[in-house]
Length: 112
Length: 110
Image 1 (cartoon, chains in turn blue, green):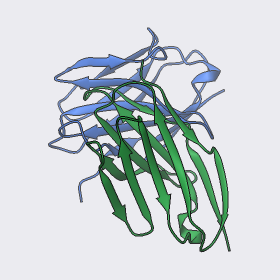
Image 2 (cartoon, helix red, strand yellow):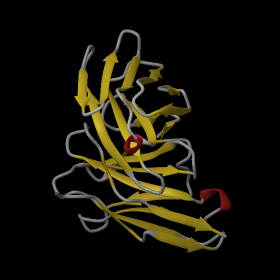
Image 3 (cartoon, chains in turn red, yellow):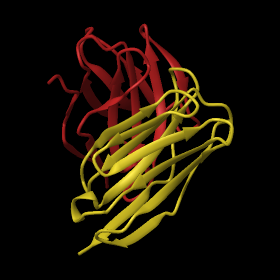
Image 4 (cartoon, helix red, strand yellow):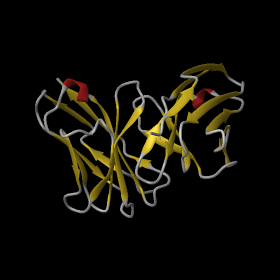
């Protein structure tokens, strides 16, 4: 069964450094999303992406964040200058027609 | 702005008992979703509810949607230990934004 994959599974970085989180969506899916989940808390919407552009973004998704689909397969989330409060699990999700979302396994980001 | 609330936040129940988790949302939503999350894991889709009065069942779990009341319920019948997890509901308005509830941490005691 096709699945969403994410790399790396765990990323440790120092405050102020840039990180790129990668996601490979299911091949015929068209809508892509990033969420974050601070440990033990709820899942927070960051951004949605369709047709090579951002469709919606939340207040969390400020100028430090960016997304792109550089090669038609990977879908990336970049955090330009990480802060301690960016430490969280980051989930990529994809959907073909905007209904059921399929989530990747997540990337645990630890900012020290 | 769409907001989603769940209750209870924590639920400890005996095996064999029934219980219901409630999910309220604040504005018109096209669809309602239920997910399960095991500790340290990703989210697993359980149900997608698309219209008023929709009811879906899988094993001991049954989800329903009342769009007039802006309420969805997840009913657990005769709970077993394997159902212990965190359950999230999420609502969407359109295709581009899904808002999650706070989650209900369910613990089923033997």
